[in-house]
Length: 384
Ligand SMILES: *Cc1c(COP(=O)(O)O)cnc(C)c1O
Image (cartoon, rainbow, N blue to C red; front, side, top):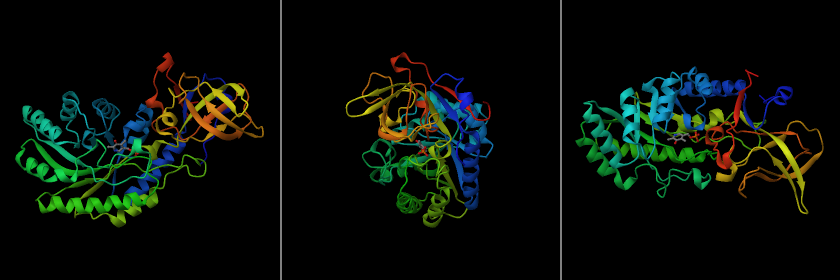
């Protein structure tokens, strides 16, 4: 399904703003649910990709749990009606206050990323005389073949617990009374488009589960995290992520214990394609070597190109002119405030509206007020 832009309505709105295609979001959520249900897999929506209340309201209707990386995200998920026993809480630096939020609500798991964190959760749970269910986040040393800023499963990354620490963790867990290890957790990166990565991940998960089993641990759950990529270059051709092959690969390669539940934490692949950043062309500046389309959105509204060298397809949605080549740049006083270089799009003129596609994940929530700018507004297709 191709996103349609209501141009007459857009022309009455001040730019830049995010525009969410609710039909596509729902279609994507349904496709994900259908595929996951085939194998009995449990999906948690990774809130950090886009924690807008309306999006959470829609996604919870599909029965997804939540994956949170801060106490505020845990609170937001609960406020939006996600059941605490479907909330996983990850992050390398959970504060005591955040852990207490999780304990207050008896969340599904704390996904622990270090030995001192496990000890701290044990202490905080002991003070309340409760037992916290935990997973340990394993750093499996699997290369996600994605941008190095969004690779998380390599030995050199700050995330998770590595192989050489397993024995110490296993011994520690046997001695602690206020944490119960119920799951292993893995999350090796984001925007992963090479599905072989997930096959390699399954091999590691199988091997690591066997090791823990040999130490007497039984896991009711195993959590493979998220990271499935989307097609940023061709959003119209591939509006829905490849859930079919993704789960088929996992199903083929993951050894699942009898009665064990397999969990996923999917963010980008659910919400990425449904969002667009709509911006207006302020000026077209012709240089000797190139032409700049200077737009009113900046890296403060969508930081992914500047931060991760990310590609977003940019379409001129109000021009029918012949294609020309542009650098599309924002107004911020930083050279990295550039959305694309040397791209072809319909001839741009002052006042044209451009759509930066596939901006539903890690877009609006990363907006900042640098240069004392206004935060972008957002609109939903079913409300305009
Ligand atoms: C960010 C994150 C996710 C979601 O990643 P996507 O690439 O958006 O699917 C899942 N799990 C954890 C622990 C994360 O930090």
